[in-house]
Length: 474
Image (spheres, rainbow, N blue to C red):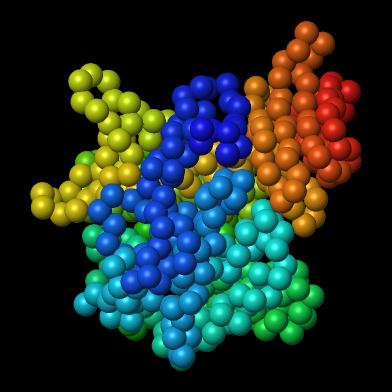
């Protein structure tokens, strides 16, 4: 049984648990093996109708496959992209599933893709604890960054790529020359490369990318920020701000770009029903945009799980845990309601959803949209956000720490999560004598619990074996 090979989650709403379990069943169903022809060595997560290995999809899948107890390894597909690196440092967005050759489009002739590898590798390190791997991938990541500098960097210090590289599909960005999302993604990449330098105790690496990061941060703040609208905008070729809001601007949160003062007004737009605060969070463009469509119209109103994941992770950095969790729960409910619609029709999971009701985003007939069962994206919500935000667990194997942030006391937890050679279980439950947390582990680790509405926070060493603690005694 697949259920026995991956961690089990506990949550007071059984539908969420069923959705988590169902996702792993889909992962197993769409798990494929590379071929001699495409040169992918090992297994990977596919989806129906897949024609290419896509760098963004591979990065998304890696963020939840780390929770598979090594049953479904995220490494072969990520390593496949590394193996394709060219002399220039280029790693293209797509490679043929048949031949392994790069696939280009007219709209993205260089095959640029959101640069997420440093963010992914940082996550690998904390979930799997392999420092040797970090050392090995740094030269690849540096070479790729250099390629972006050689091909996309302009004299003003910002980077220019075509709209197709930004994953916003049919959103109108024809005037855009400097995309806010791509520049913020590069800042995220630099920030995490610097953090990897700290882990490897490589001061020179850390300093080099921190300097690069601050250079980008300064330019994004000075050129893309509009203080009247409290928003970061794309720039046109003349470096003028294009007054069209896109959800991708919130990559700046993950890149820690806005200060507290800017962040307040910027984040407020996520809960404003006239902007991004739709019932199903978050549409690619706001309700105030003339192109916004309640039927989705592709990405013009469509809610894309990858964007919601990214905003939630950014909100965490700005200590907005309660809002981040509420967003994750609301979005998951819409995914669930679309999978199990009322009435006769059968539901499914999709690449994009409606902003104001359940159901998939729509578009003109004849287009392959939205992609059905795009599990590499859906798992970000049903597995990663389920564990990290809805339950609230953040795990670091090298630090030997588990942090549990609970907005309020609820029945939930995780069972049988493998941390290398250590299986852990953490569950909260209401007992006659009060709320209790039950812990099981094969090795010592440090457990921090924070209950926001009770203003309680405590760090305790957890010995190997079984133990329990009463919340009232904290």
